[in-house]
Image (tube, rainbow, N blue to C red):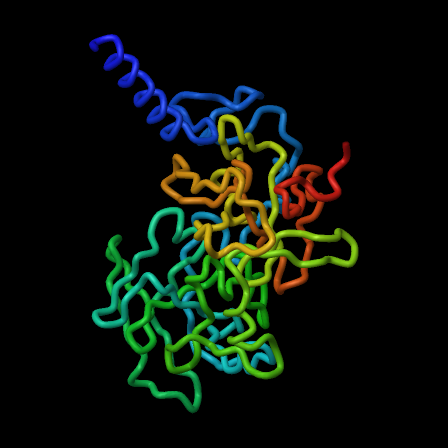
Length: 318
């Protein structure tokens, strides 16, 4: 009887161990190249780290004081309708995880590097808009951040000039702000809100050059990084790399169309970010893709490639 019980306990323990080490996420493991996740950079990487980095992440240099918004303005975007901008034409954004009543910002640390808070100092309402909507909120570090109708305002580090809104829809939580503080609404000149909502969390698009590739719910191309590892699951894209290659956030297995669900695991990264994987490979999008159909990340650094419905690299050299 004891022998049978001991065997049963051993089987149960083995099953639990297998669950807790899904895709090889055991503690202390290393990638085949010996690079542990969270290190500053993989050894012997190309000059740009294979990230497609150009050395700059937006208009503000690292460590520089955030630029004041100055006289706000309204940009009439063909795809987004009326969008609120700063005095230089940079799009202002709002974050779904923030609150307007009461105003509160939940973007700090690494988040604030990618989405710099807009200072409240000297900001003036755009012409023809309601000046009473302009306000401020005190952030955790004591600085004052501009609010519009209670919503904290941000810039996006990948927007490099006026007339850009590369942050629209990122992570399903970041949106360009309308002059009244609401989300900028897609109009008839661009993809409709309904068309966007019809896309699954992960689905397939037939690209004229690459064939069938995986896209996210915004229709943006999904990529894999050759320096990552699936067994054990490890991401070699950390720090500045993530500014260029944002992770694909968790997707429900029921919200997938035409894409494999093998190794469909949510990766709990050491930096606290949750990332979706296919066949245990971490997934990303590319900040250089500004609209559905773009594949500007394909082949960048010889390490980044679009993903096939079966989770393979598309177009990568054999």
